[in-house]
Length: 324
Image (tube, rainbow, N blue to C red; front, side, top):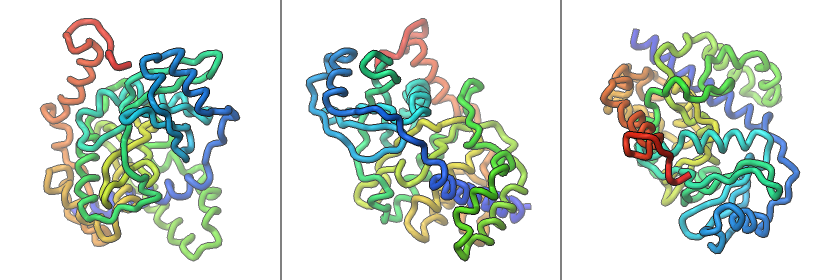
């Protein structure tokens, strides 16, 4: 039974890697045609958050869904570029402040909301800055990155509340993503790995769906959404796709983010901490199945209590998160 579960988990993780790699190339969203410059960002801050409007602004190059400007030494302004981006920012505004205190690495916690206006017709945010180089520009090289990733996902993968967002493309059974697999695989059709990629997909899609309670997942853990300092992970960014679902979606990051040969260490750490039960598959050298200890009431109480505190202003009564 252990070998069966190990093969199941490995197939699912590898298949999520495949799906993520192919769809990133195919589904890059088209930008909104808005001219976002320093003058606009300064004017928006002056209109809605005047106490921040005199801080230094520095544009950050890059980003698919949002344009970002550093604001002073500790903050960042994020403005949406694509049609879906405002919804992603609202997800972060709603949920990230409650989850961030449970995570061992810095994340861009929103502290202010920018409302749509005549100057800019979309929701935007001011968030805490997360410093380091994106891992697609400065790959992780320190084996300790495996420990850092395991610690982040151990903390994040807590039971999600019933009102947590769902995502039709993240954390769902692989069968639900298979309608356009032929088109997706056509991206790599000329390559000599195409047949193997299809075989991995079919194995993963045939595996049983996740049966336990949905947990929080990041949903988009590719190298551009993790930052690196001195060769190891120093922060996780872009939580707009966060939702409740199958944690295998995030465990695929072991192959996407970590230095070569360290995926085994990542899974070993999870097993040592009781997050996974089964012995390694031959391919990854790490555990394969999530542990039922993940759902102990005393373990998951922290995020739930934090959410309640934010909803009541920490006073046990009515109130609002003072940071937003």
